[in-house]
Length: 169
Image 1: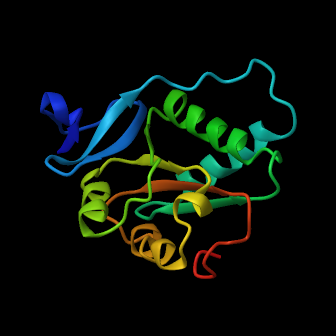
Image 2: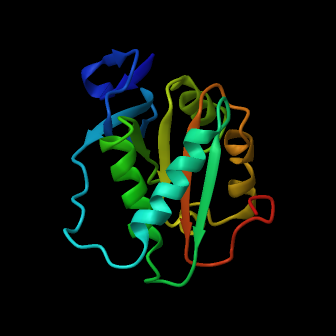
């Protein structure tokens, strides 16, 4: 079961396709809050479509394991747009939930909460190197991302710099 909208006490067995933000309250613990989907531009330039298809096809071809994608490059190169395209297709084509992580959560409770989501889902951390700025914070997530979790998850991380732990590469 997953805590959804902890303030309302909603506990559910399965997340509906959609976008959720991971939240934390010291009294209540981790929970998910439903978000409005981010609108996609009508016209997308470049090769976001084929690249997002490649990411999702790779993810779908792997059974019983997590898939991690690290998108790096210069600012303005389209990393976030590609990740949002993948998330949009995950929700609308694959009927998967997408979980946005907007703070540098770590530790046993965080890992346990993410692992408690036993259905396939996409976990998106934009500007990973800014949220998890210290190498030890990044390394603390390796166990979550290593593919041995309890369910099949697609982890999408974007980074403007090469300030990523070598263990991620």
